[in-house]
Image 1 (tube, one colour):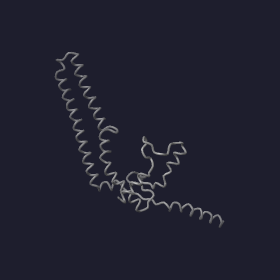
Image 2 (cartoon, rainbow, N blue to C red):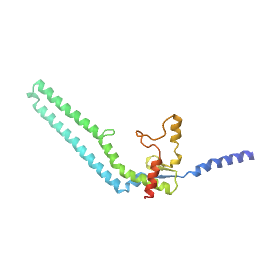
Image 3 (cartoon, rainbow, N blue to C red):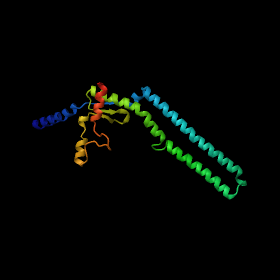
Image 4 (tube, one colour):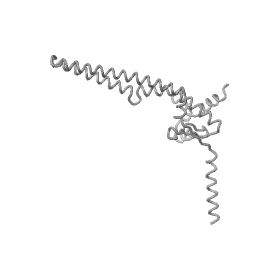
Length: 197
């Protein structure tokens, strides 16, 4: 019985030693971003674009409404061919307005692309700061509390991507078409940011 208890105790110690060797941390990017002037500026720009595009779409529907009212007022005076032409013109305008609305506010539309573009600067600033803190504090992993604890930094020495790619028979060296999949250049950039020449 004593041997079994000793073995269980020894096993639990062995299992906790590797966990203690790696340091974890987390940040709340939502809170951090809310304090950044660059983020507030980006939000203001996004709102401006959204308002402008909303007004453009609203103007299109006002024009369609005018065409419909004009058609209804003149309908009794129009021939069948003229009615069809007017109805077709109104339908075309409605379709154009819907397509423009989808183009702007739809999935990965213009507003989405503009948000992505404008949020890149504040997000890059936060990511550089996170990497710098991770290096200074010797953290291996940092999770983002605002994003359901998504991993936003990992120590490159824990990256086994090359081994998995090798196992799958995939090319592990970066090519001109796939960019640089390894963390080496990112680590060099972080080190250069911390210790500029």
